[in-house]
Every structure is written in C-alpha cells, then in structure tokens.
Image (tube, rainbow, N blue to C red):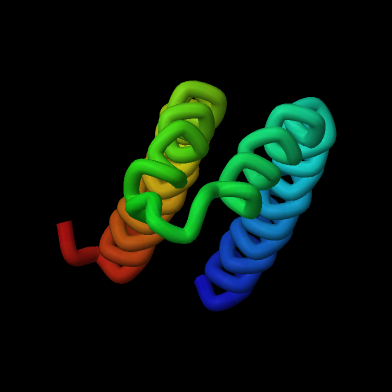
Amino acid sequence: MDEYRKKIETTVAICSQDIIDRIYQILSKVITNMEMELKQYLFHIIEAPDASFIQDTIQPLFIFLDTQLLPYREFLITLNLTKYDIIYVEKIYHDESRRFSSGNL
C-alpha cells in the first residue's frame, strides 16, 4: 500500500508543478497583452498632482485590473478546486483500499 501512496503523492506533486507552470505561462501572456494599458495607468499615477488623493489616483488602475483579471481568477479557483477534489477522491480510494485489504469492512 505504501507503494500506491508514493505513486499518488508523486503524481499529485507533478500535477501541482504542471499547474503552477501553466499559471505562470497564462499570467505572462496576460501581462504582456495588458502592458500598454498598464503603462498608461501607471503614468497617470506618477503624474498625478501631489494634492490629489491617492485612492482617487489609483482607483482607475484597480478597476482595470479587476475587469481584466476577474475571468482568470474564477477559472483558476475552479481549476484549483478540481485539483483538490481529485486529491480527496484519491485519498478516499487509498483509505478504502487499505480497509479492504486488511479485512476491516
């Protein structure tokens, strides 16, 4: 049974790293696509008068980021929950296999 556990843990670790790598690839593309607009918002923040409120100055940037990144956030949360569902099912399967092999039904 330890052999199966090691295989499952190795598979989960590999999947976790693959997911992390894919997330960085996606975010890199998103940032590249948004780069020009981000520069405009940052320029606006840098060039804002000293008397302006910081919240008023950065609010347009936050609105932009929310609208641009929200779809990715929801996708990544769903993807992450799916990953944890798989891990949970594998754990249940492992526990039930152990109970079955030991005769504790």
